[in-house]
Length: 109
Image (tube, rainbow, N blue to C red; front, top):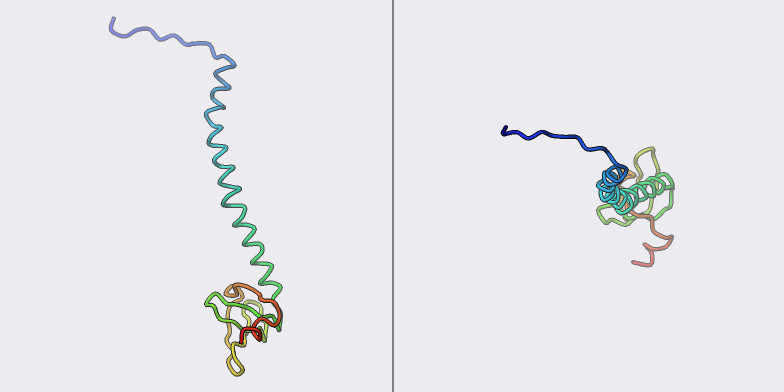
């Protein structure tokens, strides 16, 4: 005959452990990806959301475009930012990049 007979081998406990060991690097890679990428991104999104919810009149802010100003009016999704004495612009709350300490704008001028 040209084809040899195939015989099944008994499954041992060692072969089950070897099967689990094959997936250990994949599990480690997923854990590293979670702690280095996903978790910091979730923390950043949470901090940004709490910052935008806490915006109030008088806060000095920096927009995503780099403009410095103080908030004069707060709406649901928009804020009115005073950039100069007679210059007021409406921006989305999500366009606020950072809240500055009080007096920062006067110290720059």
